[in-house]
Amino acid sequence: MENILKIKNLNYKNILKDISLNLDENSFNVLIGPSGSGKSTLVKCIVGLLKYEGFIYIDNNLIDSKNIYELRKNFGIMLDNSFLEDESVLYNIMYPLINLKYDLEIARKEAYSIASSLGIEDLLLLNVKDLSISKRKLVSLSRTLISKPRILIIDDSFDELDNSYRKKIINYLKGITSTVIFVTNNEEDILLSDKVIIINDGKIISHIDMKKAIEDERLFTKNNLKLPFLVELSHKLKDYNLIDDVILDTKEMVDVIWK
Amino acid sequence: MEITLKNVYYKNLKNLNISFKENEITSIIGKNGSGKSSILNLIYGLSFLESGELKIGKNILNKNTKKKTLTNIRNDISYLNENYLEEILMGSIKDNLDNINEERLDELLKLFFLDKSILDKDYIKLSNGEKKKMLLISILLKDKKIILLDNPNSGLDYRSIQSLVKILRKEKRNGKIIIIVSNNSDFLLQVSDNVVAIDKCKIIVQDEKYNVFTKRKLLDKCFIDVPRVLDFEMSVKDLKDVKLGYRDNVNDLLKDIYRNAK
Image 1 (cartoon, rainbow over the protein chains, first blue to last red):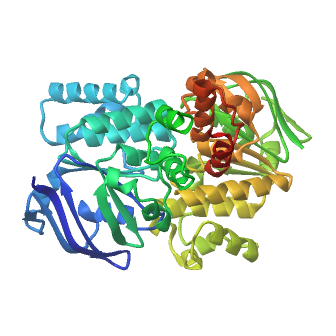
Image 2: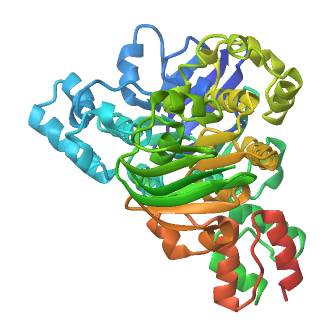
Image 3: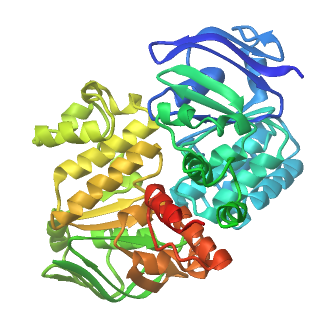
């Protein structure tokens, strides 16, 4: 399998230090690291918002000043405080497709479809200025998703959303065929991923399969990261010899402890 | 000192009767749009209530209250709400933090794992987490009697949230009234004393935290997860009829499991 995205020796000021990373196509990667470790800076470099030193390849094509405009079309990125037009939700979501000269009817259908998947179809005719920050994030996300980017990068906290919205978003993201980089501080999100990227102090500490990552308790504690609840509990119960392996299901764990 | 709402109608909120006491941290839970943030807006005086009475200490506020009174009351209140605070912290952070307790500032920087050099930076250049922490620090430094926090945990990493819990629980013992709106039940379980639950713009419960966070159906209505530690404990009770007691963190849970395991 080809790596859809390859990063080699990426440096940015004194924030990112010699970063190398290879992403498999259609993989779901969570990017985690303590605050200030360089997560947002890294994703901004990847999509060309910051001028980095180093090499980034998409499908083995090195991004340079000549092809960046074309290659950038592979990306969809959602950052915090994304700017929304002073228009309806529907217009904002449709905007990328209008920009790509889609037929208006088709653009509208796509917008409705995405809004429905994220549970915001009742907001479509409202002006974005009348929405709360949480709802605006969902609009912003819809707008990012509508062009079906091959590489989707999400760097915005959804912490303020209630669990029904959060679940809708995560389920949607898991279902699409895109290569995803999902930046998060929520340790439970780790369990959704194929691979975990751990960054600390501007360096990539690890990029491994999720199942391997959660077996290594020290990897997380050393980097001031929290493990998902059941994983943390598993490791602690293993230390007490109450269980033998990491268990991800509550019922299963209870059955093992109280055979 | 107490904050009391009596038969308050405000925006979509109907017939609210709640009280918030000093030396206590009360959280408000409810699905997005249920009106929980509106309660904070009301207490901060962002607009007038339609009917009923809001009592803040000795001040009684109703729809006829003069703007001047609201402004005076606001001197005792700190409000963390990203809609309003960001403008205040634009520019160099140092400029915004005049007249402050240096020692306390150093303490807070340390608790939030920030280096003192951050004070010389522009707010805009900070990472998301750093921005949030600086907003929290500036609020805490103001040392007001009433602290209103809307999603203080969002954007923070794990160890900063733990620090926040520690800091707030210490603050409340200094006689503060602290009210928090959040959807993170693990955080709220650790930080709160009492919880108010809002559904369809009405209060459905106001009770001590363990009485609220152990009610699955109620939490479901508020679109908030059961705190993971409690979820585990309740599962153990349901599946094996073993009572572990209610804890708010993994380490205490672990001790209970060890004591009760076969």
